[in-house]
Amino acid sequence: MTGGTRQETGGRDALRVVVVGAGITGLLAAIRCVLAGYRVVLLERGPIPNPGSTSFDQHRALRALVAGDPAATNRASRLHARWHELDSLLCDHLTGAHLYRRVGVLTALPPGDAASALATAEAAGLSIRTADPADYPHIGFPADAAVVLEPHAGVLLADRILHAAARWLRHHPLADLRPGREVVGVRPESGRVLLACGAVESGDVALVAAGPWSAALMDLPVTLHCQTMVYLRPPAELVHRWAATPIAGGIGADGRAWLLPSVAGTLVKISTDAVRREVATLSGPSDEAHWATRVLRAGIVTEADRYTTARVRHCHYSTAAGGDTGFVRVGPAVWARPASGGDGFRSAPQAVEAVVDAIGRELAA
Ligand SMILES: Cc1cc2nc3c(=O)[nH]c(=O)nc-3n(C[C@H](O)[C@H](O)[C@H](O)COP(=O)(O)OP(=O)(O)OC[C@H]3O[C@@H](n4cnc5c(N)ncnc54)[C@H](O)[C@@H]3O)c2cc1C
Image 1: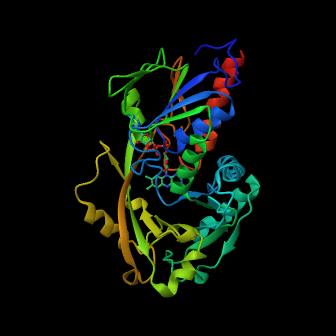
Image 2: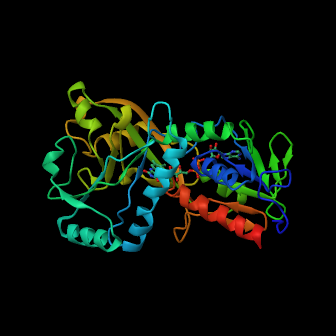
Image 3: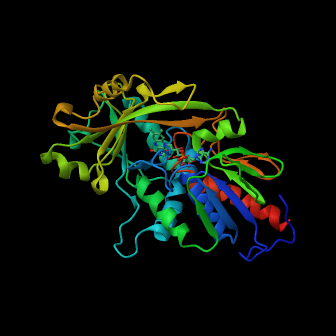
């Protein structure tokens, strides 16, 4: 990366950043860069946002409690402030429709683990309390589970956030959004980005935010995971109950399942870690019905046969050894986020802030 004398004003000399991928990481990186005064070119192989991206879903959970790990809990609890700021920046100011809804998260634990979860929360300064599973008769809890409620957690309306971020960027003079541009190579030394059409995009810095596809683009070691989610339409008499239900984890007969409720008109989404599998490629599974049936039989909602299965989706994410979910430097002019992980949506603001701050420090040096 070149630096030193470059201006950060957005003028002709402003740093030029090429961002690859318009999922949550790429869109928030683009926003943070233009707010820093940099010019941004955002390259995306599909539309912006792309319904085929990992990030494009009704909702993603934003929760902080990591039982047994006060430091991680404290770090995650700071994300609420980040998302509130983003909500203020991106929400529809005409309708006041917010993109982050604080509905809380229920976590079911083996009875002996509740005290330790409460101690973790207290050590991290996070407010949680015990809850009564009987108050949620429509959720399938494991027998004898102890349940805690994290009231400050909530739902990020993911696809609406992506649309809002794209809309915000489209109106920003420093941002240049380019859908339909497939990147086939990135040169770590120079930051030059090669496109499938044969064109070359040159910036001072390239940020590769191509989700689980980043690793192949940059030849970085990651583990790929595939998960199956089932979207349920509740029976009419339960619609109001589901609209006021928190997110829930540690549920189902074996305590490995989770659900996101129908907040803001979304469908109820259910899945279980029992169907999360490591895969070698990013293609969809050939036995789709088998995975959906396993989710539906996991005991996640009670009286499951009263619900309509509206949709089934298989989705990928990637992890790295050591669990790092931030950007890694791949060359003097290139950074990538190849392993955003199973919590990569909620943590995207922190990952983006860290890399854009690092770029700013080099520029100032
Ligand atoms: C089932 C499931 C549930 C999850 N639940 C949660 C949750 O509750 N909370 C949470 O925080 N996280 C959750 N995650 C993880 C989270 O969704 C991801 O970590 C995050 O969305 C990744 O965002 P991203 O922008 O890095 O990648 P993506 O959203 O995949 O975006 C990458 C973009 O790059 C584009 N692209 C790829 N290759 C190229 C190329 N060669 N040229 C140009 N463009 C390219 C793609 O089209 C895509 O638009 C979940 C993930 C899964 C699979």
